[in-house]
View 1 (cartoon, rainbow, N blue to C red):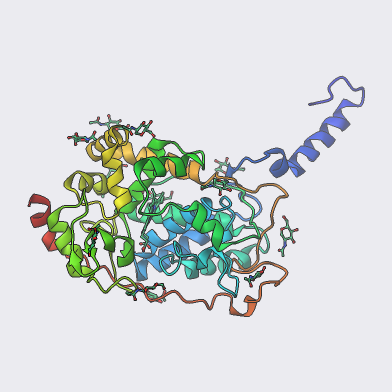
View 2: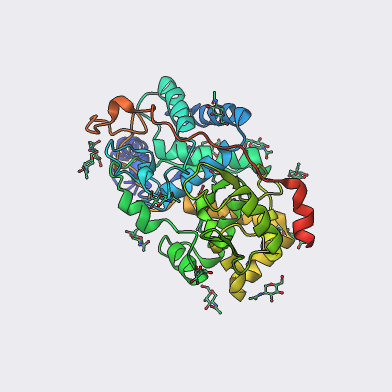
Length: 364
Ligand code: HEM
Ligand SMILES: *[C@@H]1O[C@H](CO)[C@@H](O)[C@H](O)[C@H]1NC(C)=O
Ligand SMILES: *[C@@H]1O[C@H](CO)[C@@H](O)[C@H](O)[C@H]1NC(C)=O
Ligand SMILES: *[C@@H]1O[C@H](CO)[C@@H](O)[C@H](O)[C@H]1NC(C)=O
Ligand SMILES: *[C@@H]1O[C@H](CO)[C@@H](O)[C@H](O)[C@H]1NC(C)=O
Ligand SMILES: *[C@@H]1O[C@H](CO)[C@@H](O)[C@H](O)[C@H]1NC(C)=O
Ligand SMILES: *[C@@H]1O[C@H](CO)[C@@H](O)[C@H](O)[C@H]1NC(C)=O
Ligand SMILES: *[C@@H]1O[C@H](CO)[C@@H](O)[C@H](O)[C@H]1NC(C)=O
Ligand SMILES: *[C@@H]1O[C@H](CO)[C@@H](O)[C@H](O)[C@H]1NC(C)=O
Ligand SMILES: *[C@@H]1O[C@H](CO)[C@@H](O)[C@H](O)[C@H]1NC(C)=O
Ligand SMILES: *[C@@H]1O[C@H](CO)[C@@H](O)[C@H](O)[C@H]1NC(C)=O
Ligand SMILES: *[C@@H]1O[C@H](CO)[C@@H](O)[C@H](O)[C@H]1NC(C)=O
Ligand SMILES: *[C@@H]1O[C@H](CO)[C@@H](O)[C@H](O)[C@H]1NC(C)=O
């Protein structure tokens, strides 16, 4: 690389070094780097953290929303912030059933982007802001600290059909879940590890209603405890399929990122059919058992898996662009540009999980 054999070596070396420096992001083809904005926007990560911290102080449930936003971004066309784009005609990723109305936290990303743009214009991608915000949410709920490689660029295609085709549904079997993650280069163990994110946040009733109701008749799906089913039916009446009612995915500690998810599964208290599928396969089940037994082990692996997930099909270097407004393309071709930032999600219901019942259910 260095032209040391040249007679005018010093000049060439200096030129080569200068060129190398200028091309650093391009040299790291496809590679993200911790501290990508060290010189171009040194406050980027702290500004995002501030926006997340502010939102979390008002609503701790926002952390779960931001973790899921990053996941749903990465699984659809890679981590390119395509999940944030609006279409104006209901055809963007965020309009698709797996995302609408459940996905939330968009306004936090917008607030972070505004702060970052004010500090360093046209420098920090929306995709990186999503990754930082997910990390900060994990930090705030999980007593975990980790560094996020960055340098992602934003994509400009967002199709609801891609979200439907790529996001795992809560009705998937163990084999289907493994295949869905394998398609994103994530292992079966990483699927189990990342599913542990279901230790925070909430779900609309529709995502599990058919596990406890057959029409208006009470039923108990396999792998669901009778006591938990009774609680879920009280929280989610048979008529709640299209209601805005939500319930905690981990009723014991809904705002704490801990290993309770893995402890609840053997108690037949996994909320979704897909959660319980981690128990029916002995390989996946062995991972569940190890994470239930060792929270530190799970957190170490969770952080590593989040970083790997954050690398899915990323755009880097001169690919994609840096969006100025995370919900609209830069040339304003989106018909909804005047609506940017005004799209409101339905008001998130506060957790209605009856924690006091938990001991009874778990021991029944
Ligand atoms: C393994 C396959 C997965 C399936 C089938 C699945 C499915 C779901 C469903 C149906 C909901 C509830 C949505 C609603 O109706 O409100 C949900 C919530 C959630 N999921 Fe997953 N998920 C999976 C994996 C993941 C992964 C990998 C992550 C992140 C690393 C994640 C993070 C979350 C979070 C944090 C929530 C709560 C969201 C909130 O409170 O707003 N999930 N998931
Ligand atoms: C940014 O700075 C941090 C802390 O000094 C360092 O660990 C990281 O490697 C740096 N990243 C880049 C791309 O310069
Ligand atoms: C605070 O959180 C609630 C939801 O819990 C939300 O409706 C409201 O807009 C948030 N307020 C601010 C200032 O973020
Ligand atoms: C929806 O709007 C997008 C642009 O935002 C456009 O490309 C697409 O063709 C439209 N789809 C329909 C069905 O109108
Ligand atoms: C936070 O994690 C540290 C180890 O990293 C541990 O010593 C401490 O007890 C934890 N705090 C809480 C509140 O879990
Ligand atoms: C959150 O992250 C910050 C910055 O990396 C770190 O100093 C702090 O210890 C983390 N908090 C917890 C509770 O791990
Ligand atoms: C598998 O991943 C590719 C690339 O991300 C995507 O185009 C395709 O739709 C995915 N297929 C499924 C079934 O998830
Ligand atoms: C639901 O009820 C119908 C009869 O009303 C029955 O045919 C069907 O098998 C039931 N489904 C389940 C999953 O119990
Ligand atoms: C819920 O909405 C879906 C589609 O929007 C519709 O097909 C279904 O009939 C509705 N169910 C109820 C109980 O209103
Ligand atoms: C369990 O899942 C693993 C990983 O996908 C797979 O290799 C194995 O065949 C499955 N075992 C059973 C009994 O289905
Ligand atoms: C899952 O692990 C439990 C131990 O918690 C064990 O009793 C059960 O047989 C295992 N199930 C499968 C399918 O391996
Ligand atoms: C739990 O996992 C951590 C991290 O891998 C390990 O250092 C520790 O020894 C494990 N604890 C037990 C009791 O196995
Ligand atoms: C789409 O992305 C390319 C870079 O990949 C960029 O040149 C182009 O301007 C973008 N289009 C829009 C409408 O933002």
